[in-house]
Every structure is written in C-alpha cells, then in structure tokens.
Image (cartoon, rainbow, N blue to C red; front, side, top):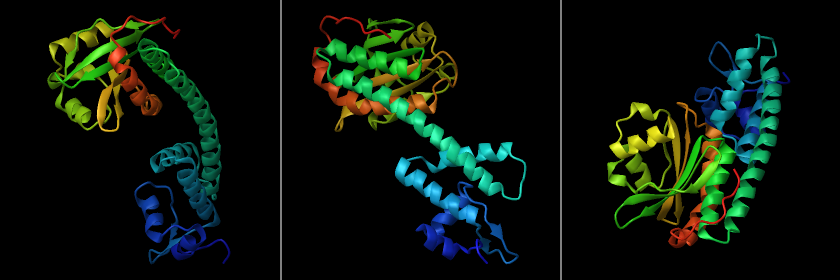
Length: 281
C-alpha cells in the first residue's frame, strides 16, 4: 500500500539507519509511527517527509535535535488531534524554522559587524571597549565586562565594564580565582563557559558578593577568551533578573569569543595604557 512503510524502507528512502530513526523517536519524540499489534513500526508519507526535513535541518542548517523537538512540542500542545496531525506539525515546523533562519541571519550580521570592528581596532582600549559595548548591545544585558587573566598570581583583572549607557575602564581590584565557587574554577581551568541563573542563592566570597550587589546582578554568563590553550580573559554579561541570560545571548558570547580571544591577546599587554574614545552603546 502506497504511503505505508516499515522502518527498513524508511531507512533506504532517507539514508538514515534504523537505529537513528528509533533514537529520534525514543529520545527526542521527533517521530511517532503507528504500531501494529505485533509492535512493528509503520510510517506514513508525512512521517517520511518529517525525517527528510529534520535531516536537512540538522545537516544543512546546524539546528540541534532538541531545538527541533521543542518546536514540535509547541505545535503539538496547540493543535487538536486531527487525522493528519503529523502533516500539520510538519507545516508548523517548516514555518518556525524558516522564521528562525531569518532571525539567525540578522543576528549573525550584527555579530560579524562587531567582529569586524574588533579586529580593525587601532588600540588596546578601542578593541576592549568595542567588544564589551558590542556584546552588551547584542545581548541586551544589564551589564557587560572584560577581565584579563594573570597566570602569575592566578587572578582575573577587570579592565572594561559597561552598565546602563556608560562604558569605561574598570577601577575594580583583581579577583582571586581560587576564591571562586569550585564549579566556576573547574570551568575556568577547562576553558569552558560558566554561569548561574540566580547569584543570590550562592555563598560567594565577600569581594564577589559586594560586586554583585553593587552591579545589581542576579544572573550571569561568563565566556572564556583563549588562543590555542592559553587563557586570555573572560567576557561576562549579567542580568538584573534571575534566569535573565537566555540561550541566544550565550550563543552570541560564544561566537564573539572566537575572534575576541586572539584579538584581545594581541592587545592585552597594552591594556594598561590611557583609554581611547568611548564607543556608543
């Protein structure tokens, strides 16, 4: 019968192994084929279309399976239970991912504009301020800052901070990394991002607590800047709300860090010089 397929046929049609199809179904809920009394999976034409489009989203556009599953969950929760529910969800998935592609293109254009300004900077201060002003504007964060790592005494030295409409050279003293929460230290050592959705729930060292209080920060994300295996510094954004740092803001920090690590490393030794004109936020 046309449009009714067993898993082996779907595998041949889509180029995905049966184990991958079962994974998409069991772990992510991306598929829900009909089951016979004997437990055999039976796929419809709409199911095959779903597999092909999800494969395209993953391979060609780099969208995570979990993100696709979230879109389908949203569609499922808002639909009645029609006979061709899978086909309707497929339409929703295409519309949602096409919209996200436009938004992603706009976001990447803004990120790349900041990167171009960063790598074309003519001074250390200009590079650092461009980075901090850029990440604050792109993420809509309450606060953003840049700190440089000093290996000799294992400290992070704040150099630039931005809050509200102002940006400038930081006057804060260095932070001793050994005083940080263990999870932050481990992430720092591994050159991995670290974050917390609500800083008030943590027992932080006195100096860190006083800075958090003065900045009115409740949640934050810290992105390492590195070149090869060498730590350069930390780019930080913070929100005045618990859970205020979303996934898009984290991705922007990650993308900026790719170019910022080498650029800030190049300028790092000059970041004690007089400040350059301040870029507008």
